[in-house]
Amino acid sequence: MATLPELPHPPIAEVFYGMGFKPLPLLKSAHLGLFWARHRDVYVAAEDMVPVIDPPATPGTTFQMPALPRVWLVDSTQTRLLQLQSDRLFMNWRQMKPQDEYPRFATLLPEFKEFTQGFAQFIRDQNIGEMVPVSLELGYINQIYERPDLKLPADVGKVIKPLSWNRDAYQRLSEPTDLGWKASFVRDAIRLNVQVGTGKRNTDGATAVQLEIRAISQYAGTSLEEALAWYELAHEEVVLAFFDLTTEFAQKTLWS
Picture 1 (cartoon, rainbow, N blue to C red):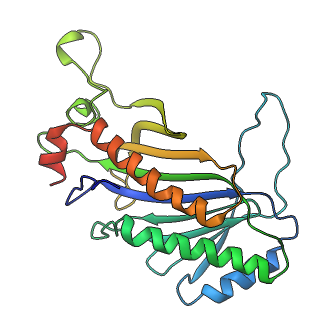
Picture 2 (picture 1 turned 90 degrees about the vertical axis):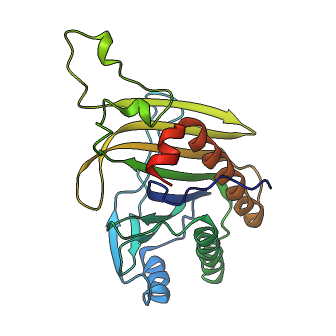
């Protein structure tokens, strides 16, 4: 695999690894509690959340809410988060304080593999079933902040190539106060969903322009190890897309 470009100070505010699998009807709340008990030395808090549900394939089709909630397991720094429900799991890293540094893909991927393989072994040991992957995703949320030479969102074109606001072209309109743009790209069976909008940064609630790049694939195999190998391919696509979408000014001035 080719060496990927890298920034000394990437604007990454959150990363999430996700895997959908065939539903586990025998999975109970007690099982999730037992799994948490085995990891409570690191993931010190648990929260119940609304399950993630895919939209119906056919408009107007009804769907059934999973019986179990989505469970969050959160570490003491609140930067690392495990999410579990009866048909998918996620692992997140989140920047919660300005000094929280993105730990890089080479650190997070082994953690995700260990979590996924550990949960697969757990449900096997508990006679719940087998984890059969059906969908894979890897997402990065980048946040860009104002500075003296960058007024946002009006100067978004200085950072993100497809977008710009030409002040000289408008007489009536003021500079924008909000922003929304999205596009999708497909390469080698990996779909990249790209979204740009205004958001709030976790560290202090200040307004930021947010660039989210999410890689998604459906998985038709049965091998968990083969499914886990996909994340390196997805990471390459996300990184190269980020460098395609952002300007040389931003790469050299804001994040180097």
